[in-house]
Amino acid sequence: MPALQSADLLPGIPRIDTPLFEDLLAEGVFGSYAKVAHQLHRDGFAIVDLGADRIRAFAEQIRLALKPAFDLDRWAAERRQGGLRLQDAWRECDTVRELALDSLILDLLEKVYGRVPFAFQSLNFPVGTQQHYHSDAVHFHSDPPGFMCGVWVALEDIHPDAGALEYYPGSHRLPYLQVRDVMTLEHNDQKSGQELFHPVWDAMIKAHKLERILFTPRVGQALIWVANLLHGGSPVIDHSRSRWSQVTHYFFADCHYYTPMHSQWPRGPIAWRDPLDIATGRCRSGAPDPQHPRSQGLVSFSSLPDCLRSLD
Image (cartoon, rainbow, N blue to C red; front, side, top):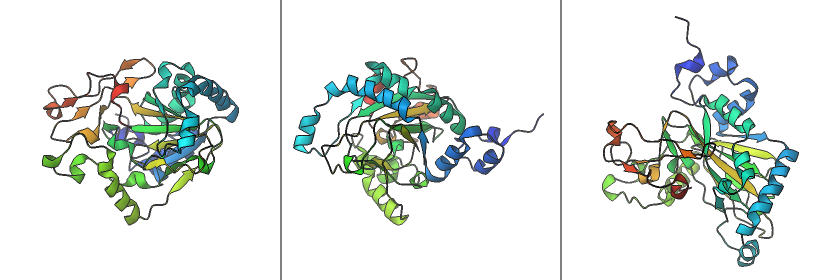
């Protein structure tokens, strides 16, 4: 029997998270994406260049298609604290779908995670979100853990006063949080939002002295972040500035998918997800077999299209 390679020893852990990461790096498993893999492993994010001219062409079409959906003048005049967003615009705009399924991104993600990715949600923003920093893993999580990520693409040059994306390098190494970690089951309010976790994230950032970084990219640059990286939207200083961008969230094949914020993991009801695969337009089954122990008393979201039950 041939000896197993390091990449084959822990298939239940993303390659960028494995304790054998240095061996994988030395063996050339990541190929031309070794630098990206190292950044994701060390910092929880990586910045890649998708090509300014290529993405500028995407941006022109996306802006033309989506701008009528936003009242930007009213948003600026009222100096609103919340941002504007359009979820799953890929349904109406082929260019949004094309960017979400970009072959360079998909190839990169498969190489550094070790499983085939699939896009399950797109979000388009004309301005800054001003969203409290958070971990995507309380909204979208996988079993085994870690097989989820986000990719944020700049559709224009981003000015820091426009409410730039913010993130905390190294925060991906903090524990994945479940509702049980912050409250007892008998007090578990299934309608609680991510605010439930805000005090814990605040305390952990302070305790670990994590640094806040602003992402002010040029058009065509993209930020890839792992599931547990704390990130959000900084305050908009100048409401006359736009911040056109697209976020795509990806899961990976051969996992189960659920929403921790609405689950009593691992022994109570679980809000399993059947994420929609943008490439096929069909849902992927996210729950274990009905006879699986964790399926007993589950809360299933499968009666609704995944785009209607997304919480991020």
